[in-house]
Image 1 (tube, rainbow, N blue to C red):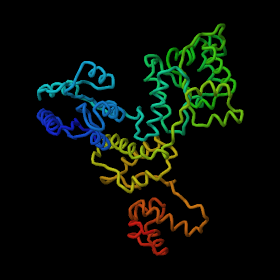
Image 2 (cartoon, rainbow, N blue to C red):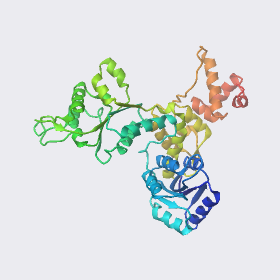
Image 3 (cartoon, rainbow, N blue to C red):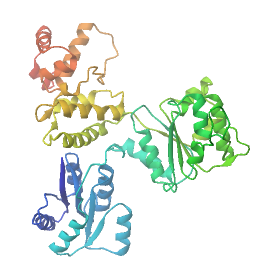
Image 4 (tube, rainbow, N blue to C red):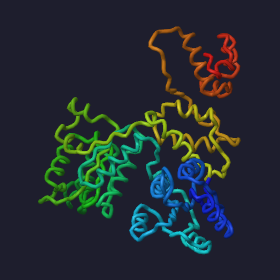
Length: 441
């Protein structure tokens, strides 16, 4: 749900006073007394504006600002402090704050400041920022931020849907090349004979149909960033030409008579293991070393469980607002299913599943059946010893009943059987749902 303003201050009286001042001019206001509470609120809602104190225990206002901007980049953040200096204000503005108010201030001053910045048309900036909570992704982001400060080539590897393209954009936006072009091309989407001209350009008359000269992507990305998505699909001939461009920092157009100097930062992306392709002879080793100066491997979603809850609630906030289902929540049994699904399509698949669930949910909660996960692909810890199919079936039923807290309907949906069949199986194996839920199995 999108709300107006969140007040954050560990001085309870001050927080309440700010809240009352803004309510008097018809703003809808929530009040919390710590940064931790504020972040918890952002798991349920997106706020158009946050007014926060700077000095707070554990997480201060500056850190909260960074975290909020990562969750909802378009949220306006105004920080307040009794210890303001010009240097503080400049630093805070650099971090993304819209303004800085020095205590003490009157209710009228606060109202005027908020009205100045309050967005009249607020739309969530969707899916073009990396949303995460896990330490694993935090480390990846830090590597990207360090890489952004250089012009070194970056190789981003990871499964489809993990956010490789988003990380490439983040690196560019945080680099000293951010004011120059960001050019991306998918090497697998363009036929080989056309890809060469797309990358390197051509002169008039270079081939049949070349009625005009055309610069290639390397030239267009001059002083900026060139992203080669699915670089593992590059033909050996083009691998050789790419290697020369990176070594000589110049490009030869098809039909050209002299090389053209180019200055680009190269970011390569692939969902394949290039090192294994090198060993097989399918990718040039010298090119691999050239593009792999800063290696970044994004872990799949199933390896960062902490992000699953965070992302699910983030996508829920976005899609329920669009669907006009502001009270919609994810049920516990549904979240259990989300946590135990393998997510082969990673974040992209989760986004699509939550969007579909919001559309089809009929009550005030998203139930497992709303996810339409026809192949459960649960993360099960199976024993090493062999067992009969009957014993395996019994263990699956017990496991699923535990995960759904004894909900037979949801368990049947997870297992892909009818409730009647489940009841018969429970009776056949002499199981007691109450004992299963209480941990006696």
